[in-house]
Picture 1 (cartoon, helix red, strand yellow):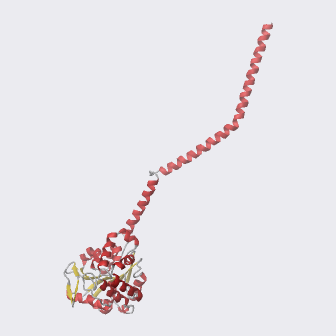
Picture 2 (cartoon, one colour; picture 1 turned 45 degrees about the vertical axis):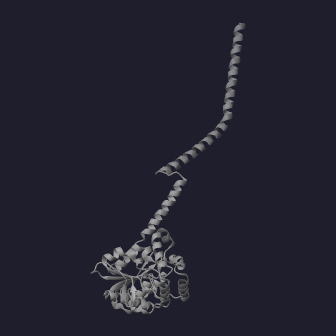
Picture 3 (cartoon, one colour; picture 1 turned 120 degrees about the vertical axis):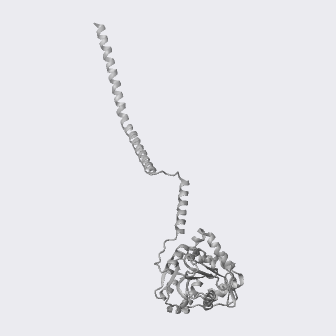
Length: 356
C-alpha cells in the first residue's frame, strides 16, 4: 500500500485480511517497523482485517525532530483510523505500541473493542537513561545502540537459535531514523499513565516476558492490577515476545480477541534446542567409547564378575598348591622307601634259595 497522507504528514500503512472481518490494529515497538508483526500475520489475517502502520519517526513514516508525546502518538493512531474510515478496532501494541494502547483506552475508549498490551509499562522512569539514548542516537547514530538493544530484546539462547529472526530485527533498528527514535524516547521518558489506566473499563490482556529486562514482568503486572478484569499471560521470552515465542503470543492474542479461554504451551523452540544439545552430548560420548547394544551393559557386568571370580579361584588354587606341595613330597618319599625295602627283601630271598 502506498504512503497515506494523514493530516499534514505521510504514514506507511498496510491493510490485509477479509473485508468484512473485525478490524485489528497493530502498533510497533520503539526502534522497529510494522514488519515486526510478520510472524503473526498468517493467523491473524484469517480472522481479522489487520491494519499495520509504521509509527511516527519509524520505518517509512514521517520522522521529524519532535519531541513527541504518547498523547500525540495516540492521536496519530486515531487519525489513521479516521483516514481509513474505521470507527472501532481491536488493538495490539508491544512496548511503545502498548503505551499508545493505554492512552487510547483511557482517552478514546469508544474507538477500542479489546486491547492487548504486550511487554510494556505505564511509567518507565529514569530520565537519565532516556536522555543518554537520545544523545547517542542523535550524535552517533543507531548502530551505536544496536548491540545493547538486541541483548535487551532477545535472550542469548534465542540469539543463537534463530539468527535470521534476530538479523531481521537488527536491520529494522539500524534503519530507524535517529531523529524519530530520539523523539519517541522523549515521549517514553515523559510518560506516566499509572493513574489514568485505572479508569479503563475495556477487556484487556497484558502479556509479559519472563526474561524481559526492558519492561520487566513487574511493570506488566502493575498494569494488569490497575485495570479491572485484565488478564495476564507470561511468556518464556525477553522483550520482543511476539518474535521469540511467536506461537504462544499469536495464540494468546487470537484466543483473547475471540473471547476464548487463553491456553499456551511451552515454546517448541526450546524443546528443539534441548534435543539438539542432548544429541550433541550423546554423540560426543559415542566418539569416546564404542556404542553399546541393548543388554550389553548387563553382559559386560557379568563378564567382569566372572573374571573376578576366576581370578579369586586361581589365587586360591595357587595357595592350595603351595600348602599341599609338602604332603605330595612326603608321599613320594614313602613310596621310594617302600620300593627299596621290597627290592632288598627279594635279594635276601634269592640268596637263601642258592644257599640251600
